[in-house]
Every structure is written in C-alpha cells, then in structure tokens.
Length: 245
Image (tube, rainbow, N blue to C red; front, side, top):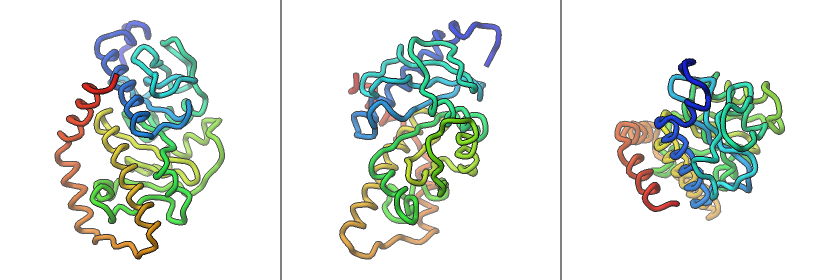
C-alpha cells in the first residue's frame, strides 16, 4: 500500500470504496443465507498491494445491517486507521495473522451451522469426495484439529494461520470455518457452496445409510473444472448486488 496518502484518503478512494461496498454486500448476503451468528464472526479483505492493512466489518453490528460506510480499516496490530466503528479483538487476531502469514487476500470466518456441525465430529470436516458441491473443495481443505479457546491473543491467530498449511479453507475443531480467496466474489461463492456441501453430508449421515464417496481422481477433476471457470461465481455475486439492499 502506498504511503503517499493518508489512511483516510485511501479509505475513501474509489477503488477502496468499491471494496468496502463488496465486503458489506457479502456480509448482508451471508445473513440472508443463514450463515451469520448474532454480531459475531468477521469478513475481511486486504487493501491492494498490502498484507498489513485490511478492511473489516465492525464490532456490534448485525451482518444484515452492514453498509459500505460501516466497514473499518485496520492494520495488522489492530489499530483502527479509518471508519466510525470499533474493532472486535478476536477478529483482529485471526484475520491479521491469516493476511500476514497465510498471504490470503479475502478472509471469511463464520460459525455457519452445517460446517460447524462437522467440526464437532471425529473427522472434523467435510468429505470432499461426496457431493458434487463438496468436490469443488477437493485438495483445498485443511483441518485444525485442536480447539484452543477464544482467539484473544496474537499467538492463537498465528496458530490458526499456520494450520491452514496452504489451504483455502480450514475447519476449526469445535469452532467454525474460515474460507479464503483472491477475490470477494470467489470467496463468497465458496463460502455459500461449502455450507451447502456440509448440509448435504450432515443430512446424508442422518439417514443412517452408508455414504458413498467417489474416487479421488473424479473428485480432483471436478475441483479443477470449478477452479478453471469462475464466471459463475461472479454472476452469483452480481445477482446478489442486484437483489440485496
């Protein structure tokens, strides 16, 4: 991030204003899709060219009410650089570490119901060989199998970031999930379909019947097909932009 301009000037620049609007849209969409939990959990996106300054939803607002002007700008030590709301501590520790250590551009952390349910099981996460929606995540998922309490210090955020081990998605044992991406529209699309895949697995388990995953080769091919053409992700986000206020 250039140092020739103040944080306020950068925050209100057209490029960053667009990012703020898209981040707020992703939060409202998540609320619409049942992925929110009270005023907890956080979405963030790094400023272009920076891994130490990022946009974040503020403390104390429902995702359904967040607009572009509510988004805040912070640095990786938790200092608020711009915005009218406060920073929630666990958000700063988790997101700052993932942006800095895992080098992820967009970081979406939720306790969405079905994905979180799978973190409570012995497997701790999704079987990416089951449904077609699950296969899109084949080879992209990490499991953090050790719950360690609330992320109220830098060391816990750093532990989570290292547990990602290059993955885009991490299931946090007894906690929730984190979905990362290069762009907000891609990351939100993955978040939405991750919950759909987890829901299908939980529902299938509830039948008591034996589950029937496909082989690794087919799962890998489906993942490559989805990653090779992300227009559908952009079209989905465009549709949300048209229909959500």
